[in-house]
Amino acid sequence: MRRHRFAARALSLCLALVGVALLARGVAASNAAVGLGEASRDPLSVPRWLYVATGGATIGASALLASFVTDRRFVLRIHRWRRTLPGRETAARAGVGLANALGLGLLALVVYRGFVGPAVPTVNLAVVVVFAGFRAGVTMFSYAVGNVWPALNPWRTVAARLPNGFVDYPERLARWPAVAGVLALVWVETTTGVTNRPSLLASAILVYSVLSVGGAVVVGVDAWFRNVDPVSVFFRFYGRVAPLSWEDGRLRAHLPGMRLVGGDGYEDGASDGESDGTGVDESAHLVTDVSDVAFAIALVWELTFSGFVTTVQGGGVVRALVGVGLPPLVVYAGLYLLGFAAFFGAYVLAARVAAARLQTYREASELAVRFAPPLLAIAAGYHLAHYFAFFLSLSPSLVAVLAAPLSTPANPVVLTLPAWVSALNIVFVLGGHLVAIWVAHSTAYRLFPSRLQAIRSQYPFVFVMMAYTAASLWLVSLPTATPPFLS
Image (tube, rainbow, N blue to C red; front, side, top):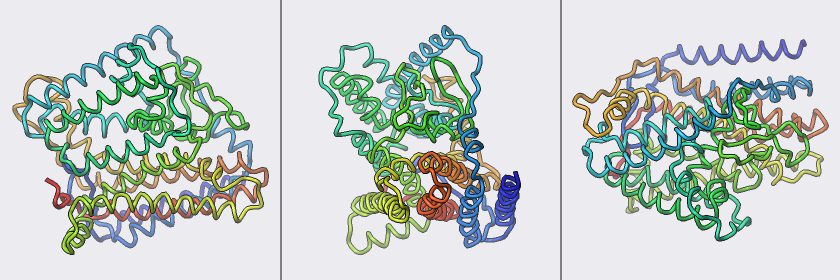
């Protein structure tokens, strides 16, 4: 009990330090999504050194906080807490059917309005629905409430009604195709202009639709959408952070982020009975191999990259490299791939350091897999910091295009947000990291019988999390700008 009281006081002190940082004076803090539009640029006065240092110190303090909570029964009770919500199976089936129809209708509208709608992105249904509606809104819903994409997914709806499964999916590929796919999608979003060229966006979606349905028909619906399709894996990973899930045909509530720890069983591979809404059970461990680790890191890195290239300082780096004779796309590709490699390498190094410091039979690869799920809580915090203001700014346009999908809004509205909204970026980033620290702590106590081993195993991973935090907080503290050389 005393340890728990000490932990609560330590957390209060950390939050107080964040408050001091927010009240100080300094540089402007803002952020925006790539290409389509920007959040409010009203300045939030925060000294950059205190802004970044406070975030790093808070995460370090949170790790110390977690190390004082050593009661295994208490830790287990936190991540096992759940409540079954009332509901009927018939209503659930009807809801899935409506979501199927909605997904198909939105796909048709997006393609149609992309080709025949207005060229102005903030009033074109295709651009607004894809980026404000799905890239921002549905993603936020996935980790804040629950994953509804399996029911909305129009390509799965079509493929499931066709003969499929003619070729067995090669298990050795794991989810590497999804890793390559999500990196490619972010690259297309960042560099090709699909965020402000509706016809190009519609063409890209048509190509993606053919590949997605065709691939699902060849290797099977379940294999394709669980291993290859980057959008489905994207939402499934984010959905594991959410407090709501389907288990054994029932809607259940959990503490946010606690399903990242895994199922109730301590044995490897135990099933937690969770369904993604399509009848497919998920295993106790969401991350099962190195490809899943790479996907989780890709979710963290793609937000860091998009945040970097939309800042004044990031644009300066790009211009400097182009100035020495490098083609712009080569510069962007180099920064993108080298940055991902650096993020992935830092995490792998942390796993090796943890394995080397501990007297354990568990190898570095196993530690890397088991400690990867907390990265999804970090990614959720990053995503919220990047897209919350963006979503609010474009929400009037989203409502307008959905209310009259076949016509152009006469008076499009893009909200200008007050300066204090930018302060929420800090809360979102640090909140995601605090959840990640607790998930790592709970995971460590499931892996190691010794309390000292459980505590020490977390330190290398916490150090990497602190580095990610400092980088993210630094980026959201910078003034935004349009990425150079990208039309």
